[in-house]
Length: 371
Image (cartoon, rainbow, N blue to C red; front, side):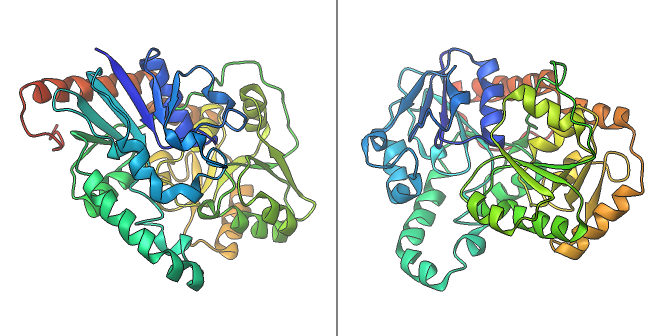
């Protein structure tokens, strides 16, 4: 079976990129089609055979893809997949909009329906001027997104949270296959035992890192933040001296900081949240907002604590409560093992084998399995 992977853009590092690395382990010979590629900001992508769209040649496209949002539909529709038996689009934006011939099975591994068009629209367009100016483009992209969402033969969601959104915004059924962490927690790791809390995240608005910073400014507990993003400069300006920004780290360094922390802090509403699994895989609990994918990966009172409102007071109370409790690292590790790579491989391949014969028989696809 000849396989291709498709992803929105290759210019950052986050949970979606961890998913791609897991799929690369399943399909090491599959090329990766994408709109733009920035090797400087995506060193993780070196093992891939990357094939970019015409956008790659446009000014600033690889580092400021947002400038070309209106051209993303054309970019993905320009690819040809005639030579492939199976195409897997991994997407939270436009990659699902590729056009394939009837003989090619297109499975969308959906990270979330396009956030800035649907579930996160109000967060992205809070500025009244931006909201007004962008309305024509957003209307066009919403129309195209609805049309493009009907193109995959089948949907696999990364969580029950995303499964609900796929049904709500696209009217499509899906099955859930949880991603796995690609972090090797068994490798050599430095030990940073100095009682800090940890955030591992892209520094973008919807992650709510500013909420955690304000809470830790008041608490005074040490907080280390791993990751980069568009919000980094602003976040640094509001952080007190008990908060340290560490930028992008290697896997061994990341394992070391996970190993040495008291807990991972997870303030946003996530589609799934692979960093939660990474922390638990080295025996560390999580303090997370009670919503989104965290509800599927954290066992409250056993592998972490939830806070109920996205504000400084609620998070602060949870951190103070956490500081008075003890968590068993074995419970955290066992919970993370529910999302192992072997289980991901088994479940993902099972869905491919389920949908492939249906496709070959030219039967309608896109409905979820009942079992």
